[in-house]
Length: 259
Figure 1 (cartoon, rainbow, N blue to C red):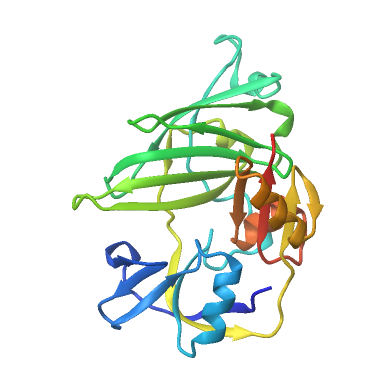
Figure 2: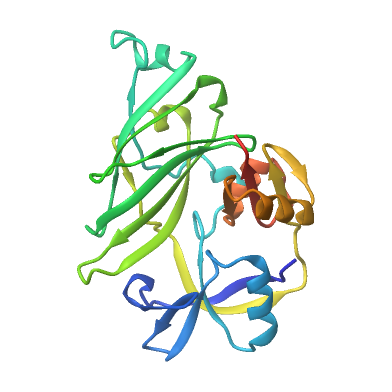
């Protein structure tokens, strides 16, 4: 399990404008590599933390100083389409057996969307839809999976004006009425923190789930290796993992879906 780390002194350098290098980017201001801890496996992060005395890294958070009571406030999203009739109100439609959301993935930076997938995330199942070349998507799921706070994740690849690809993901939390009422879903993560790290001793545990059932790390990694067709999602944001796992003391959350 990797050591607990925090970015002690966030800097003002723009992650998006840094040069892409292996497993991170290069900062022209500091003349050093900035590790992308959002997309490194924990074994690799272990190695980085053990071998370096001065480390800069990028870590994405849903909100810089998010408390557990703030969970309802982070929004983006999509337009609700009644799966059975257009004459019922949105309030009535929430209780239909099948809900379909039609919306669009959009870029705040006006870059080209090369690929995009949006998912409603639960512990036991992932409800996903791929976006077309214009960012339009249609996402369906049963009404019964909606909760007070719904976790939505976007995995995307964009192409900038220099024809460079950039792949990332973003998680957001929605109340049901908010999820069903918005048109555009912004793909970029607004709360990226870049800066030097410091390591603390106290470390909450990581949790591993297969189809909603908690399993051990070794079993999880063995199943993941044996079944590359299973969908895999990792979540590192403090607020998201606590809501998904329903745990107050947790670090990272790793999910596998066989369905």
